[in-house]
Length: 579
Image 1 (cartoon, one colour):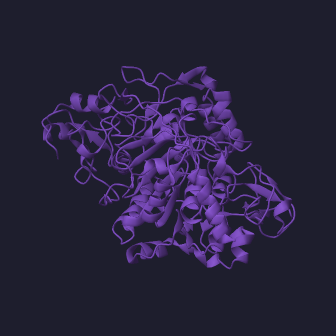
Image 2 (tube, rainbow, N blue to C red; image 1 turned 90 degrees about the vertical axis):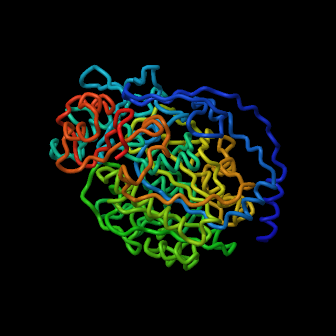
Image 3 (cartoon, rainbow, N blue to C red; image 1 turned 45 degrees about the vertical axis):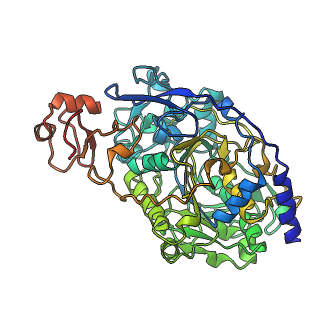
């Protein structure tokens, strides 16, 4: 039966139509918030990320027909033996890559100023997206009702209002820095670039950036993680009965504020529907879910802030839902949920399973108030471990953030069913076979990860009640949605495996070359920059680098030259020596 299913899957794939589409050469202008730097260039889509076309949301839905034959899929099956999904938390695409050159980022005027302005309800005014140098952010509430308000029927203008409501509801002390924002301006409208996240921008430049990756459903962390491993979020009225499960966008069974909330009355949440591990187990495909133990990354509900809770592989929480799945327990695979130290060991020894999910703890998750730098360092350590191990030449790494975290994004999500999609999040593909500097404009969600795994390791079998032998009443087969792009687009299997790009976990000006970063939202090629140390002043640095205080302030959009801080990246004027 397994062989028959695998054969049928390959047969179906072999009859895909070959869609030829022309890609015109486009000129894209990528501008950062400061008028002190702007860059432009033009190349064909799919070459270097320094400039490509910028499709609208509606256009992105029309560019998804895969032109691939079974030869491409067979090459993928031959070259990729390990898929690693790294799932971080709570950042929107525009928040991290809104000024990345060539991406569908924050709409900008020719002078580098955003031409969008988000309403600030209580002041009867609006706020334009701004460059945020802070390592610690607050974002906004990010449940189903907040997604609806942020999207606002496609106007994408609810972010400030929701962030302000979230602070009032969730923060006892309005002066607590965890509440985010300054002077009443929520940082939900802020964005980062190569100055704060150089490694993420480096991965985009060296590998593949996906600028239309959407969270699979318009809600928060727990439903996203359920979709990541099972393509559904539901409540089951009878423990152990898949057919009793009903769609649940916001509130699947969970432990909330120390109490178990279930539809069936069971003492533990019960996820009775079918998940991907069931198919992997049936086909003897190895898998592991690696959990960085510590505090859990998100609240038990969709609130912005809450007291830290312990997360470990033996105490399932919202970022670790697999122990609650009946299939995992029945297949005796609870031991596949492991500490992340086991991942590092497997990467070093070259014994990674076919499928890995890697999940952080609160400190390293990038979920506010977790520091951006800590999350980037953690992710870099995971990627470095793979790159420096024997499995690099046969691995595809997919990096994403589970939901938008209340941060601004300008693209209206496409609708595929009653669950989503949700808002846009960053997506990166890192692999020795990934195209270099490529921006993937296809419409994607985490469904594409499941589809890729199914195509590579299961012969195209889907989590489908009609064919998987374990029926449940899910509304659709997400992997087969016609809007969903194909991750094969992001690879070139004809190329020799590319060498690793090992990066420092906490990059400094001396460790990350500015010439390796894109020319918008960060330094121009060859531009010098410096990481501010404790005790530095702008006047001292100006004298040290042969520049004026005014020139450095202008290059960095600094209004008050007395306000610089340790850890801040300062870009130096042209012709300044590289420190």
